[in-house]
Image 1 (spheres, one colour):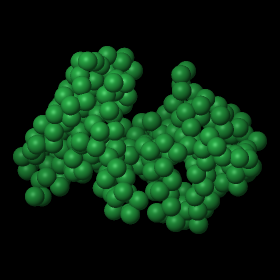
Image 2 (image 1 turned 90 degrees about the horizontal axis):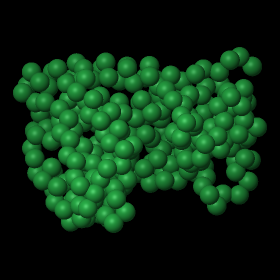
Image 3 (image 1 turned 180 degrees about the vertical axis):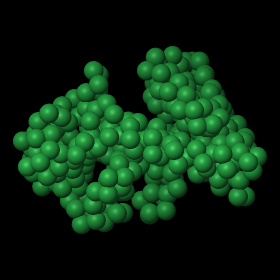
Length: 281
């Protein structure tokens, strides 16, 4: 078997951002500057780093980054009030609430407070429902990134058997829906799935979204499978045993440099999409 195709997320992300630059310039000529508001609650260093990365990515493209940092003792009610103010701000196109929030906050209630028109991270149940019916504007960014990688490399989806390992509401479930909407046959696996390795062996497309380092083993793979690793664990390790799966796959994403960079690019794309809708109103 020939060497597998390494699915370079950095290359995909640059392609997305290069196309966005012209769109942002066009919007600014119309007097509209796309704006993403990020809300960070508390002092988690990893979350602060992610918010800074997203803000920097915005600014490089000419998207305004409105950063709001709330203290760790912020209540659910105070956080929702902050989100409501952003909902009402006509100059804000997208709202990102950085996950996780402090444990005393009702995170789901906070997510649900985000306007569907500004839910560029795809975290509301309303957005999830629209996605399931096939007309959601802003799917969760990591599932959207996985689909963007498949499309960039012209990897077929229709008629293929996709196995998604993981069922989180912002990754495993939505990517399963998106693959199903593209006419794949989808098996979604989780912690109670029996004979997991046997199911993975049937997959033409494997999506690893379980949050456990090196969990997916090479001997679980069918020869020629396409492997998309959405995991990111301590030490820059994915959910897939990369070296072992590399031997079997026809195409595979590395970690880092695979799904991650494209995820941020999809957040930027959704923000620009929202700004264009504002400009056309």
